[in-house]
Length: 434
Ligand code: FAD
Image: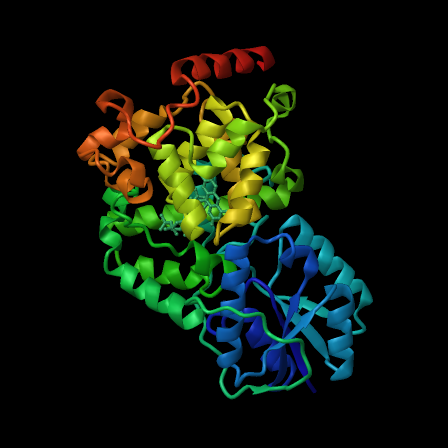
């Protein structure tokens, strides 16, 4: 017998229960498949494509070079590959996002053998954490408590002695950045030494002290279960704070699985009536880091240059787009998905909804970030701003956050809006839908 392991968001061999099931079903003879699905690939931005390509190369190297990559519609490709080797079953880890669900149903309908779903990219699969009435949670804190109480299984090792079945495939896309399971584990192990400080330092983009594990998590180069098991051994407030952030990731996925429309539509229905402005020149200024607000511009330039953005700055630039420029969060969310290396529909859309005030458990709408105050607080010496906005490098310390108070800066724009007025306008629009 043989089996197919269809890799998707689980590009690793260790702690991969679906792979263990494939190895058991195929009696050690497994064909490892990745389908480059144009519906996903063509929509991803360059940073995500580059990382995926590198990650696939790394995965294939750990499988004696035998990962079979095929380009096409999974509903055609997967059955063809399974039939060609007479596979007894096709194994996947479950996908709960809207497109993944539809795709998997279509594949299942055209397969002549079973599609077996084992595990998911989460410690607790979406839909599993339920309240006393059997419903999913709308608010994070009770979700978090129930998530902890639910618990998760211990990590499992990589399978031994797999005979990877060779087959024709398309050429692997090019990718040269550091990626893959081994790199993810090394990054994680190195970060664990510092996790005690996470609680105190995570809000400081100038310190760059967060783990940057969102990328390996996005591609499943590591499973959160592995990370949670390591964190449990640490017993520090930093480790606990980190665990809570992993739970946010799971909460987002849980919400999106329950409300697939939440990808692009507000969870709070009254926000359907919210008045937004068309994304015009101000939207371009935001995307290009030319708003005249140094903290916002530093963030948008970091995003464009590196495909990464610190969480605090994500919140500030998102809030600025929605509440200072009055542009619909959907446009910002789309730009983020294209630009971020960790771009993930669930985490992205639900966080945008949180910032825009229309999410299930959102920040109260009237609490509007002050883009200058946030910079002064979380980049107290101005180092982050100077790193990304060269026009402000001549301004020492905190002055970099308020160039207009220090004679301005050559080639750097004046603020594109008056924050106080923009804030009042946001509140007026909110009053109209309440
Ligand atoms: P760390 O601070 O080291 O956190 C550890 C892990 O916890 C992260 O890797 C991530 O998996 C998880 N996590 C932390 N904060 C959140 C959060 N607020 N929501 C969900 N998971 C979280 N994260 C993505 O992975 N993909 C996205 O597309 C994405 N879009 C976002 C859009 C906006 C507007 C905002 C405000 C946040 C978004 N986030 C997204 C969440 C968060 O900003 C990133 O996960 C985090 O900045 C990644 O850096 P890190 O790995 O160093 O984080």
